Length: 171
Image 1 (cartoon, one colour):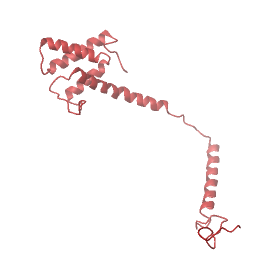
Image 2: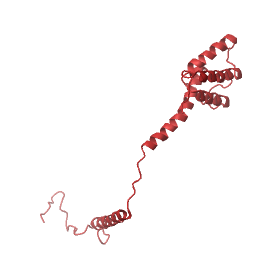
Image 3: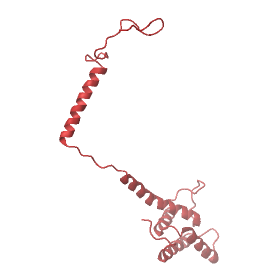
Image 4: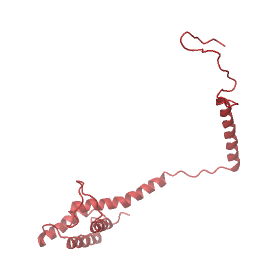
């Protein structure tokens, strides 16, 4: 998914140069001349040489659409000019993370999945019967058979058996 980078593939380096050159021709720098354009192209290649070409192309597409959001100071980007090499790198890395990171998240979820446990009809019937017995036992022991809240086989005390001046009588 990551893809070739200019650092690992000469063809990717040529493709990256085409992308950066088109960006520089489309949107000028604030102060640009022939010499500075060549130096800026080299700066772009140095800043982007470890990123896949598709991520940089996606970042340039986002720049042309005005969809890059805000810079590292929280200010909106000025889309009238070519971004700096560091800005384009930051945007391309975000594009890389959006694709690769979301796939990594999905793969981790898949790896953490538990296999489906299928039980036989006999096991299911046995568990339902045990649950019904437990539910009946809990209803009669906690609530009482008549729903009064009085536990089965327990009686209310006629007088307080705890507190100041009272003591529990042995029964």
